[in-house]
Image 1 (tube, one colour):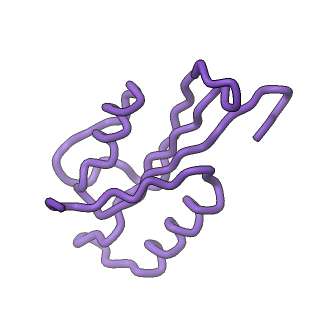
Image 2 (cartoon, helix red, strand yellow; image 1 turned 120 degrees about the vertical axis):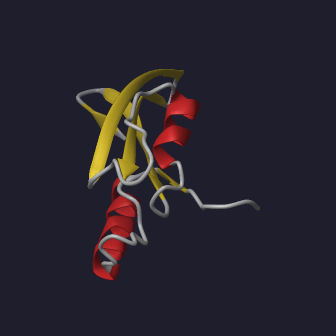
Length: 100
């Protein structure tokens, strides 16, 4: 994508609440999303970083609120957050909880 003659790509992470989504983005991209036990991201948080890649001079990273929350159990919200992530992003990372 291009805006004002600058190229960028958008990456969003989605997954269950407390599955270390913010931690993963921090480790992969060196950003500073808040991390803690329990819910810390509400809605969608964004960070922009510069890259050396020709096709995407900037990365917009979107950290989403956890899905499948035990606190609010709102399936409609989960569906809306997932659709928003897919609509806004070039890449969607789906984080899962537990071991593979």
